[in-house]
Image 1 (tube, rainbow, N blue to C red):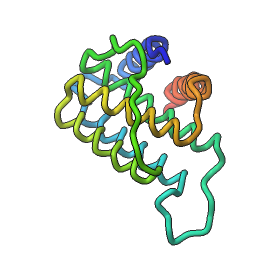
Image 2: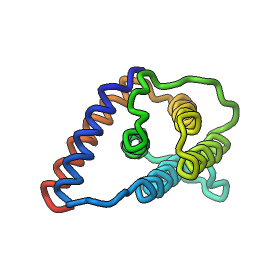
Image 3: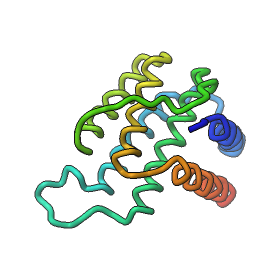
Image 4: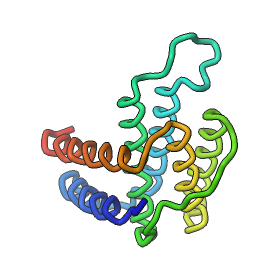
Length: 161
């Protein structure tokens, strides 16, 4: 999947937020923590780790929206470090059930936050791709949901979110 459209959209949204919120400091760590929180929210909606509960996962649309919330921050962090030249979503097989993939993704994101280099960034993308595959999200699903959430994020900024 080509990422350039998403990077462009995210760069425009980031600029709008920075202007609207008058952000003048480096917010890489804040965005990194936000990505980790969004990943946790995604895991929570899948309920994959809740062995004590018989309640099933949230609706697919809710899980997809949480997934693209993460993608917003992953794109934004890449832009901040100059990795927005990543053209294609890097793909590589990763083994494990959904719980394993969440743990691996959390580790990859944390590694990138602590050592923001291209290899760590691409590994985070690879693991998000593995999550997307495990959740049965297509590239079209992700792009459509990203565009929708991107519009919602602009609206939130306009309304004092």
